[in-house]
Length: 250
Length: 219
Image (cartoon, rainbow over all chains, first blue to last red):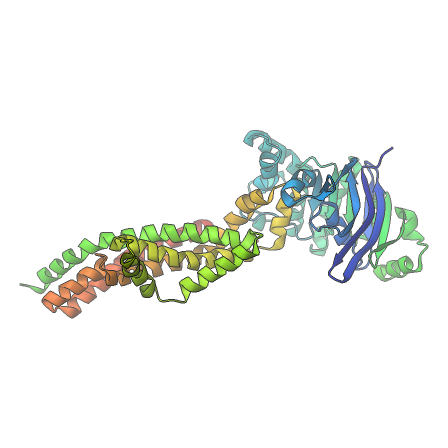
């Protein structure tokens, strides 16, 4: 079976600094993949290259058989990229909700403007998505009135409203107060149970172990080791993975 | 003649100019905000370096030469090469062109204050760059720029007093001609001051209401 996402030879340089040095992996539909690794290992950059928020320096990304960011051998601009980006939902570390729009409107606006739903359809969709993240009761609120955990759940609803083929999570709990991490992880767990395809950059090792099918360990811009989640986290083979996991536990 | 009736006479004379003051203020405000917004968009999001340089040059020229000099060039300079503008048209055009440079900076500051994640989140849901600017960035930048735009509007109202120098028949123009004929210097200019105050205070109040309605935004 063809993988949903195929990444081959992905590299990214900022001037002379090579952040990604050739990343290859595949994600099957319904698979949950956790990307872990020390800060500066390139895991966030890798995720952001998938929807071209960062333009890869080389390599290929295919989603559902379609080459992302390149058409007829030429790089696409942001306008041309828009429909491809809409296929991937992205959740950011800092939520990035739009403060001038209500919670409902944050979730509904792209459905109207990108997918062409009517105002009523978009609103209904938004309320459905907010129900999924248990935020219906704050549908009329402004993002600024919400806690970090609530904001992140709304951000997840916003991404879900795209009906994406793939969900990208870029350290979704790293900016949260410790007591708010749980509510976001719980929502992600529920999404995982629905069989969604998820790519998660995270420092929550226990969460990765329990939720992910596979874990990829990145260090120095390369995938050092990848494998079934429990196996990799409980008994890593590579010394660098072992060292990283030891540090995290203490 | 009593003091009061003199005052009323003066006020009547000045009110003849108040209409021009208000029209010049509002029309040049509209012109500067529209021009400034377009310049800010091109300068902030346009890809052409040459255009950026051109806009920077325009802003420097507009802001670093006295307004009066600009007005004289527009009014007398253009007339000498055959383009005759009415004094009011020259006043509106002059203040509007200068204001475009001023408000361009205010809008740019508004756009620059937005965290990068705001645009990224918009692109990630599938917005085009145009939609991102229109629906996500502009409403927020406007709110950020609103207080300084308000200050600029009041400044502009006061600055219209210099257009009397090109004989635009506004408040100061009438004040000066009354002074030359009556020598009631103190009374006339005090009345002028009160009249400007009476125009500026409601403007300030309107801006405050707008700020309270739209300006309270912190991500």
